[in-house]
Length: 331
Image 1 (cartoon, rainbow, N blue to C red):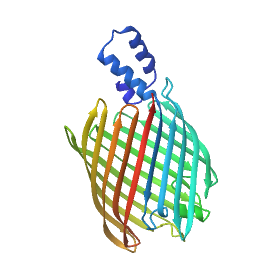
Image 2: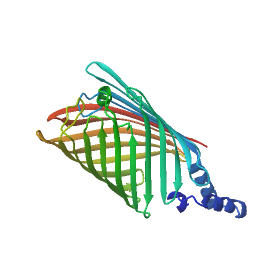
Image 3: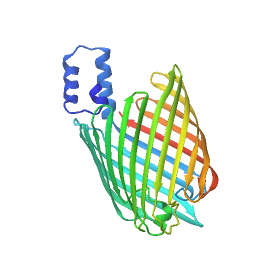
Image 4: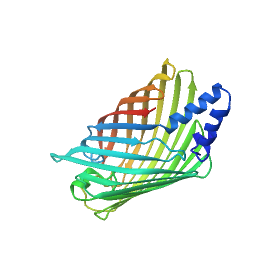
């Protein structure tokens, strides 16, 4: 079970199947075979968000974004095929903006390394081919390094695509997992846009479980980041330099509904500060509420609403955001 948890599949499936054939029935053996069956299962994950902010820091006003990921069952080595669809919708200057990304790929489990490669094509505003790849290496149970590259990235602003500008994204990240209750990471991202702009961003975060007893759980998160952009004329949000710090507190209440069935309510409250060159700094905040329905091991469904204050070019803006997602395992 420990090897499954950390992704070490080499020889693990054969060992579990041998135990299932030779060992007498027991609770621990049932748990082991169940965990293998659930981790091998294929699944469909769909999630979407909508925001009504008109600020220049978002893709465009009244943004929609959805992501659908279909993953095949894992083979005995822990590898599998997957297919992905990402859609973006918004409005700017009275124009409706649409873009989509469709890709198919394969996840190679080479423990302690994992390699994901996907190829596909964009649609609508973005009709160029795409190649996405990610390489992760677990140096230990606590430390993991990740390098990724996206040729024709889905994070390209819709306003840039409207102007005929595409972008490639390169990321370098290190993650640290102290234990079940504390983890964090730091990273560097480089977005190379066709208009000559190179966006450089660094960020770090830490998540800590502060309290967990019976039905109640309290989790805190700290975030800090900064970016630098080239001085080019652009319709998308492009500050020369900016930085932000923020903290968020989540309070969750879990209501058991039966065996492996729960209803979770979560309230989140956060605050921080955003600084932009030539405009100074201003306070930011957010408050959100969401529901989660977990019917393990087949279905997990979540939805929520969030309101936040952001700052763009020194002007505070207030926006509402809704989100929803479902994960369905094929068992």
